[in-house]
Image: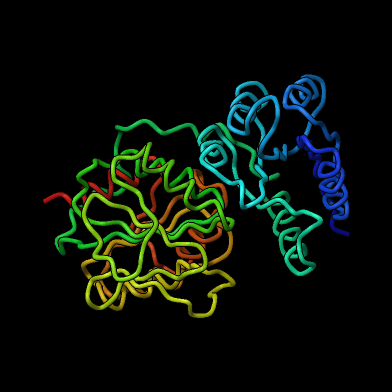
Length: 346
């Protein structure tokens, strides 16, 4: 018989009723045990002085400290996986900045007021995230990687790329930030990026990335001509691709791999309409979204890069790509910017 792993969760939620509701939802899963549920961040820090937990679930809008400072203090004193939880309507840059402090994921908070189908889906995503993130052991590695050192695979792309496509899921916001922060503001080609993230968090992530990165980061809009020095994020509920005219295309087609936006849609468009003039980058994430399409890009003559296992929170998507033979280069996240610079240098 397979041993059931006990996941010990510490919950931090200001509202008594919501705290109780979250505990009820979490403990409905036989693998999860809530070891403590507290109102204030300081109580969580006090608990961790003498008790162990597998993961901390931190709600947004705390009365004493915001999610960013709570995450920072946990990571400084008791490093372990932190998952942030917020209602989509209240998601802001504080939530996304918490990722920079060491949080491994942001999820939408289930509430009693949600319609039954939405509550079921939101709860399922919360439970899946908690179980997956509880297995992340080396959270301190997400401190920003220093520049310098030897790039894993140096190369100059003779095809003179016109666009870079990036796909990411679980653990992706910080991986994106690590890469974009190391790029110059005048990076010579536009970047189109798909990041799987709960609805309502995207604009806050775009603002945070723009403030902490070299290139300007914005949410992509239909029929825009992508410009050098800019990063375009796929908007909530839309696939984003590169059109035959070289402009951004947003589509409402069916979800791919259960996702909208999907990395698959972006990479397929780059393979079909850009070919040798594209660079594809597949970062940390669970599942296989974009892996087959990255292989399609490579077959079309594009340069392809995959994040390595050691620097990935979850190596599902990159691992699938490697297994398919889609990766020309496999690199730690801290070296991908250097590789992109070498590929686009005149």
